[in-house]
Image (cartoon, rainbow, N blue to C red; front, side, top):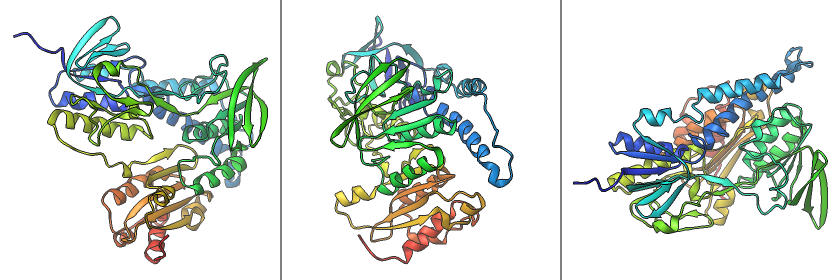
Length: 460
């Protein structure tokens, strides 16, 4: 009997969600193909997560060393070699497997290069060839959303995908967007001596997080890195002026202009949906592919995960969604994602990590809660490292169960695992307080904040 389908499963996209889906499906014994129209591994390994971690390792090291005179270092004349850094960056990307399909091929996955386009619910084209599958997982990711700014096509702007490709550093850089990506690149470039300013539409930086974060961060960026932040600023257009770029923006009721060497668009993203979804019967809207709580689309044999769903995402979330999507699709289970314990990370110095619900979300839902706030200066690690900018904020319900947490600190990412477990397992506050924490570490923040919460009964 002729084989009905070319593959048991076709995965569209090789980023974290797609990779996790493909590897999980192969482990389950399925014949799998994965389609990629750009670089193998997606943006995380090629442009953003891993390359940016390598970049910030360099910039943070330089910044800390240059400012180490208070510890007795003779580092005022410290310099760096940017071409050598670029060489290191290329090496780190190679080591991380950037744009490599070797892992997929080793696992026995068929790699298809090109743009995927559904022809029917069970067929899609990749280039000039057509492939069929019994099941599909869509993990097509996202693309840059410029927000209707005039001139982005005629003015050569940096994006989060190209910002680390600069052969040399500019004298000045203006970043449009004060979310996590904009703030991360602001600290990276400012650490290396670039004059940086941020234009943000909202009234504060990191507008999706609690107010304390944006307020503390804006002051810190200005005092430590000389980064100028212009909030409540709507960018209208960009234009080439000789070798510079002129930015026209609205602030208040007046139109203003500024010149800069280079513009970086950190304006957010939108789901990549140009896949012929209507031919497959998959429902979607401008916000992304529509799925149920089990990641199933309107077609029972097609699931979707990652950035193509819209909203906030991360490599960690996308990976978990990819694994769960395969489980539900193959085993017909009804597993659901628990998003509250996934960290939202801003990779700057100090790191910012948020988990669970924000105070604004709880107010909107009219939920009662109590909060505690511990400044970084209250723990011994802030004194031994001479770093006092930051805090830990915890939000509890009336049963003393942790609902949300925000930490701004050195080594904040190291605290994320414990906070995630407390939220996910609903660990009682008394048990958190009695858990030993190293007194000379930044984890002492959790102990102090938990003690403070245990003695506080005022609900908001």
